[in-house]
Length: 547
Image (cartoon, rainbow, N blue to C red; front, side, top):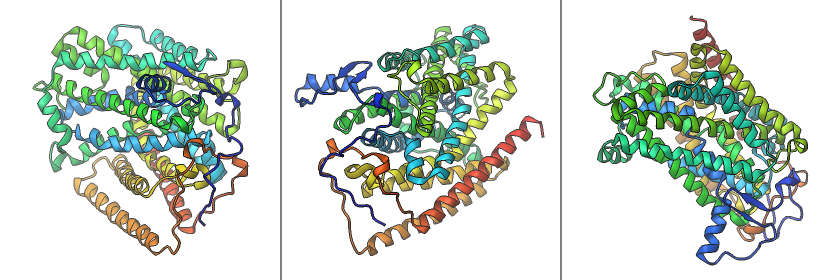
């Protein structure tokens, strides 16, 4: 069934679930009044508007270069030099398209990602999406505190003191009852990521080699190491395109009160964040590669603290200290974002007040979830052994890779729901690109699951999996193209009135009707993901027990 909707007039009522999400935009670097509808014509006015809007895209991207990213990029640089830099360039359009879609959903609907899935696809799918998010976020948050302990250990700080102080900073920064104060802390932490810049120049890697490997794909080690390299590539994808990012940015855009009118500015904010995250990831690969080149440490990656020691041996004590401080900063900003995405999602699903504009008394459930997940993760890190923590880190990377396709599928379906996005609905090019991305993510997920279950998997088996998924993808694309060509009535999207169009209240929308083919496809994907998750967890438990 094709949805029809009038897009020339503004929606008569807002769908926003929390009235704290309506009002002045109070950003870290400026404020825009709700009644300020003056056109931004001069350069100064546009710059002031951009400064006020900056935040969601910057924080979600810099938060992506968290403790897990330091470990993944450090491993790539130490074990393979700069030969995998090209993966970052390929991920740029993936990052932009995914985050631009949730940006649109947030600004146009005023409703969080979890609630939209629940309302448009039913309780069954909504429950699965939130359970997936909660499980993965809990484990990711543990890895952030592992990063805190690694940085603190290198800097000579007591483990218990470092974890307790980090948890206190993360919790207290959100408990001020002021969105603007929280964002100022978050933006200051984002600025802390720039410590990687002096580390890069103090280690002085070969810029010409870096530039070459950034644009020329290379699979180091040849076919003999294909399985190992593929797993690392999947880890890079998993740490760069994470499900929590979708839930976080959509809800944060809503909480910041950004509307479609400021969409262009928010896209600039997103590009700023992407530029910083890619530059930071490339810098980490490059200076780690330079620090370990020609040493016995090549191929012997242990953890981020080991990278700090290698940097200190190569460039001096200050280099190691700056890197460790950057790791500590990244772990805290990552914990900020992951904790907030969890609290926002729970608030969406259960209909509780969920805004940083509210004090603790006005959103007790929201702040209880936020503080609860932070304190629980901190307690786990303090209580667990180093071996168990290492296993948890592995589990996060594996589960993130397995669950990557699910979030992208829901995102694509929501962005094609005309009742939800009206004139902001996806066009054919965005759909084609995103569908291809989903296909690649499914392939990587299958490879990762197979590699965990069968550690000695051969290069030939991996190539067979890729070929099989490729054939299925081509057949699916051909079927979709044929159906589009044979459609008797074309229903173009009316893009007029976009800047003022908002999604009507959820209860006024007609329930979407899903085709049989779509139900079968989604059911098959969910069944695979559920089986893969169970098998991966069993494998991790067996490893923990020493089998």
